[in-house]
Length: 169
Image 1 (cartoon, rainbow, N blue to C red):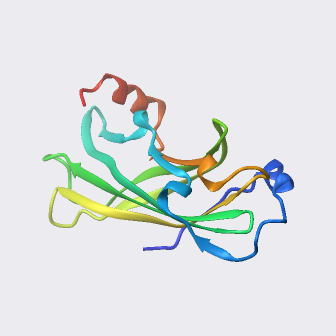
Image 2: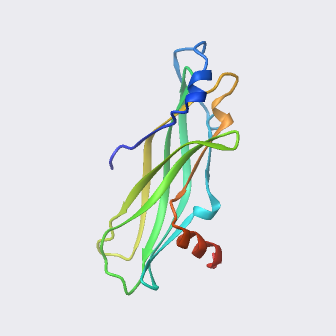
């Protein structure tokens, strides 16, 4: 799986980050890391082929590990995607877009969109684990890593978001 990186380059945060933090790297417990959530409206994606459903996928079980070096929290994210293609669809690879966003004080300070390739080869159902190798979060003076959040979800079109709001869960 290709290494993926997201850099939270918020100038305000970088400018206010203190240099006085220790230069040593320390792995921290989960409760000291940024929180990880799936945006509830973007947990699922449905891709259509004309008016028929082609693919359904759902993000599950996100996990985040982190270490703090100076004024930066380096985090590694992983999550599972459970997906299925319709009985009438061709068995072939598909891709679904997902996003990783860094949140501070309720504001998105960085966001990146990735494509996850789903390699359907002989079965119509697939479960894959995705990893984002590095998420760099600059920690502002007076803040700690757990003051930030990482939010993930599928990058939906307006039509897909509307479908999610009306489709039964």
